[in-house]
Amino acid sequence: MIEETYVKAGLVSLAFNPVLNHGDRSLQSHQAAECAAKQGQFWPFRHFLFENQNALWGGDIRTTLKQLAADFSLDEGLFNACLDEQQTLNLVNQQDARRLDKGIYSQPSFEINDQILIGGQPFSQFQVVIEGQIAQSQ
Amino acid sequence: MSNKLSIAIVIFFLAILNNCARGGTETASAPDSSSSIATDTLIPATGTATPLPTWTHTPVPPSATATPLPTLADTSDEADTSAETNLPTNTPEPTPTPIPTNTPVPTDTPVPTNTPDPTPIPDWLTVTGRTEEGLLYLGNPQAPVRLIDYSDFM
Image (cartoon, rainbow over all chains, first blue to last red; front, side, top):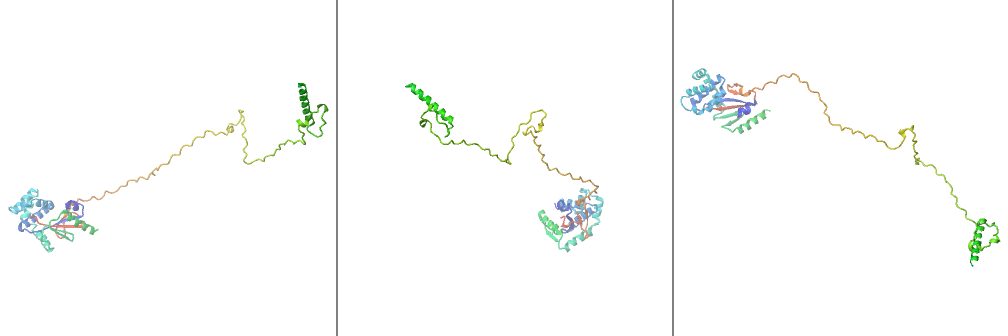
């Protein structure tokens, strides 16, 4: 709803910072998302991964991720090579270190300009904070 | 008896006539002895006759408000019919003045000018990039609010 309400209107830019709280599974998953970014499909594949979150908990994580990529119609050759070669490993690790430097340990957490919201929030709560920030910027 | 009465009546009338002839004045001649009557009993003697009053005409000065009496117009054919009568003529009723309505003043129609097409607004949901810190972002990079989602897929 934030994307449809505020991002589409040009009022909010949405950024993503990975949180690696569940070991290798988290690391592989976030690398897979960055591999999709190489094909310009980060945001839709990110949504797809959240919709199939349960599948990430079972089996081989890379196999699962490759299957999901195929299901999503990504270029399997490029994606598989990217994932196998861990082409995006450093980038993912750098982003995780950033959130640790900011003191972000819980997920999901949200940084709205200089204001932090921890945990899942109703859309109305986001509205209050976002519109307050918009008013301050005017 | 009736003969005496008749004679008395005649003598009476004669006395009256004699009195009228005198005019009622002192210079009236003496009564005719032949018609002596007892005037003291029938006709009272009068002194002077009261003259009859005479009417005198006092001219009335002309009044400013006096209205001359209308004279009858000449009925000849050559008479001016416009001044024929002072009777009112049928004057046409004035035509009603139309009530003016608020007529809008026509304004100059603006001539369309060649205006450039406005800059299309991008679909911010299709704009992606990477921040200076290396984070992937979606939307307007100049947006007043930046929301960073710290999440794990697990």
